[in-house]
Amino acid sequence: MCDIAVMSQDQAAASDFETRLVQALNHGGLLLLTSIGHRTGLLNAMAGQPPLTSQALAERAGLQERYVREWLGGMVAAEVVETAPATARYWLPDEHAELLTDQGAANLAVYAQFMPLLGSVEDDVVRCFHEGGGVPYSRYPRFQEVMASDSGQTVLPALFDAILPLAPGLTERLESGIRALDCACGRGLALMAMAERFPASRFVGYDLSAEAIDWARSRAAEAGLSNLTFEVRDLSDFDVSATPEAFELVTTFDGIHDQAQPRRLLKGIRRCLTADGVYLVQDIHASSHHHLDREHPLGAMLYAVSLSHCMTVSLAQGGEGLGTMWGRERALAYLEEAGFRDIRVHQLEHDIQNDYFVCRP
Image 1 (cartoon, rainbow, N blue to C red):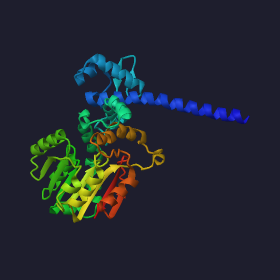
Image 2 (cartoon, rainbow, N blue to C red):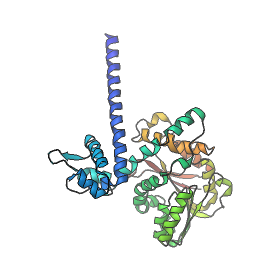
Image 3 (cartoon, one colour):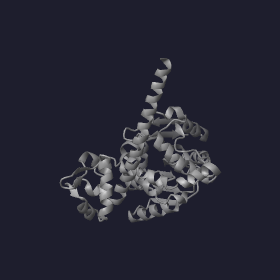
Image 4 (cartoon, one colour):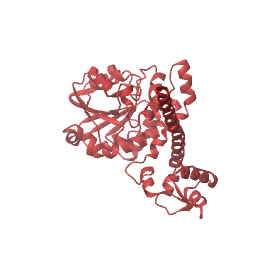
């Protein structure tokens, strides 16, 4: 009887796992369809609209009807789009549009883009499993664009009301006028927002990506932000190349874990910070221990992002390969090693993906 009971439990477990895998296959298809719907403008074209035929939707979005019709079929199968078979019309329910377009507080379709983007380098990553090394940054032509969209939802809406106030008195100092640096700034959206809000302060952004810096410079010039400069800079030697005590504020927004030399960067940040300065860090909320990430709501996805971008890009530069999921424990150890003594960790209600560290010398 005991063997039969054990066998029955094993069979049930196998059946449950099979169900999960089948669901994952469907969910993977949904993410690809959602990414396509976001990039082609189909989701936005359907938001708030009455039921449309595939032809009417294609004309509204300026797309080819046959492709639109097949996409609609997938979204109906995924129970995202509704249809009326008698009239062959389709609509996006308002409650779905709130989460998949800019109509709501957060557009989750932005994050669906990560899956096809990372899938495009699967062959490169498989090669690295066999040969070592990493996938160079040049293999991700859209990564800065997608990350800017991500930042636009996690950082920008909360920057002035929730993130900067984590450091008491920081907003008032920015209003009076201080020097601020953002390392690994990407397209610099956070810096532009701060430069506009705090004209008495001076802002600098460093990033390795020339494409991102060119984009940021162009936008800053269009906005007339004379208190903001951007520089293409490799930060792997920042521990020795950073100008001592040059800034009262340094920020990094999801910018440490994919660095070639994260320890050197953190030491450089400490070096360039004034004695009364503040280092404000946004980085991935995770544990440094795999078994503690089992309950992470985005754990599998973030490990996939790490394997297919953050870790491998670092290794491609001969770096540490820290990875997206380096975790709070390791982050605290690295910050202390860099010379920070007062470190406070926060989480914000709107952002389940990140921790926020307020660090002082």
